[in-house]
Length: 226
Image (cartoon, rainbow, N blue to C red; front, side):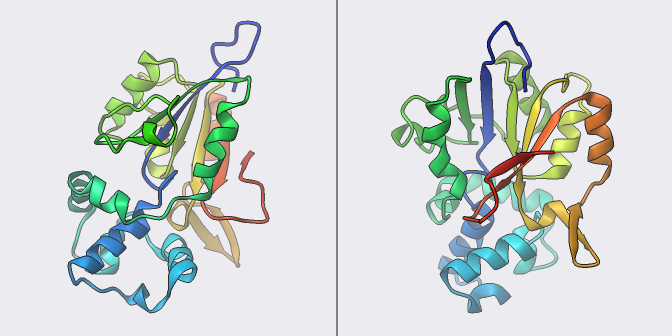
């Protein structure tokens, strides 16, 4: 958390805007409803629908509608229809904490990245709004290095692992925040564990910090460091 420490902590936070501030997994299904594609979760309404999507859906939400749709097609579709899917998506609980983060003395900059401009600055005027492919590992790592990012908020533990293991990524004293969402976990004897348990070995080897962020209101803290 103290990467680039020079007498005072300064966090440069990068948020990849997919299932972090905005619940695009939910928005995808809502958008597909407008195209007359139904899904088994449609019987739920409002909050129940959101909770079930986030708990039950895998990374590729399209597979709820059609199991033959692969990840590549799904994420290309997300990028090509990002504005429409964003407009159909509920916001996560984390979005309400951005203003609080901005007021903290230890936060230097907040970057909210999307594949297209969706005018995040209209809501948070002082943030930095980079436009790049938020699903491409090389692009993410290059942006982190070029902008001295110290903290990354990402939706997917598999993507996080690839970033940690990238040859150009120095994760020492870096902070990773991970969305608390079903596809990042596995259940054993009614207890939830990280889908990739080796991430904790990497944490010790690379000496980084990891926190989990609730996307929906919860009695738990919004994030915690493990």
